[in-house]
Every structure is written in C-alpha cells, then in structure tokens.
Length: 106
Image 1: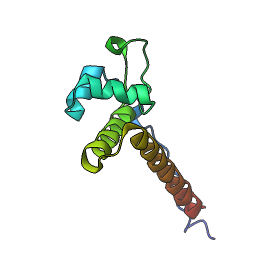
Image 2: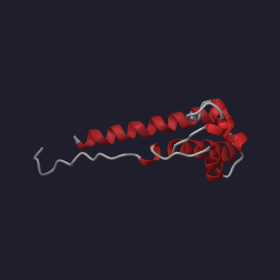
Image 3: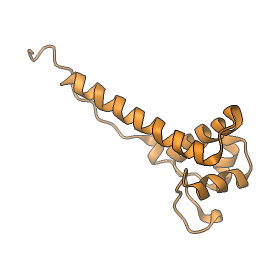
Image 4: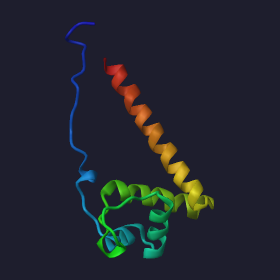
C-alpha cells in the first residue's frame, strides 16, 4: 500500500464525556420523572458520580444511555433488566464496529 492511499488516523475528544448534567437536567432531556432515572441507576444502566440523587452528576453518555433504555421500555415493553442488557450489547456492537473501521484503515 502506498503512502498516498493511506488514510490519516483521526483523533478527537468526545464532548459528551465532558458534559455535566444534574438529575433534573437528565429528567428534562428525557421528558421523564426522577423516579424513572433513579430506577435506571438502581438497575446499573446509569452510574452517575455523587452519593445521593441531589448531588448526582451525569454525562452526555449517561443521557444517551437513559434515552435508549427509556425508549426500549416505552416502545418495546422491555423491562429494566432487559433494557440494561440491550444497552450494554448495543454499546459493544458500536465498539466492535469502531474497531473494524480502524482495521480497514490500516
């Protein structure tokens, strides 16, 4: 493979990891009640920083996970445990796809 056909390796910062959201912010963004988000934390779908709900700090990644889990529950009737498993598997699929794309570059 010649140097001209090689693609440059891209690097960046995921801003979602830097975003800090409160429980109220996540509730507003997901249009749900705090109890629903607390249940996602109890199930292990979300792991915010902080010791009590009033001090929890979420990231944009938590927000995305919450939206997916809540949508699985509302649209497909998946229970919390099933939503937790589905979110985990979806993230693993995304990670594997990313790895495959980087292998195609090399």
